[in-house]
Length: 126
Image (cartoon, rainbow, N blue to C red; front, side):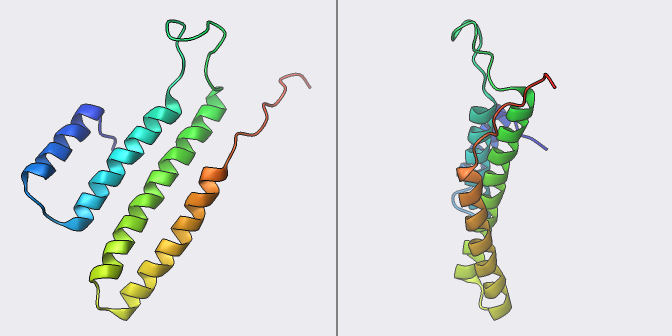
């Protein structure tokens, strides 16, 4: 389920009105807001009114790739935030081990996703 910008803002305002609360929920809300902003930025295209008439933005496949990368980065950041909270607050050695493994793996994947560059456009002529 996706939240619109207004819905996300309302959710964040409600969370702020509660005066604190669960740090995991707060981390998820912050990560969700960052993910939403990254997705909007990745999917924005230049319209004729705001840019050159020849700039039509990325091709649909490239745009889908950009959305995937942006959303996966946000998803992984949410996992890292939850794992960091578990690492700080859990006394169970197995939970702490899984949390550290999650942090290590997701940070490596975030680095890989951030290094991604679109593949050169394929020629339609064969």
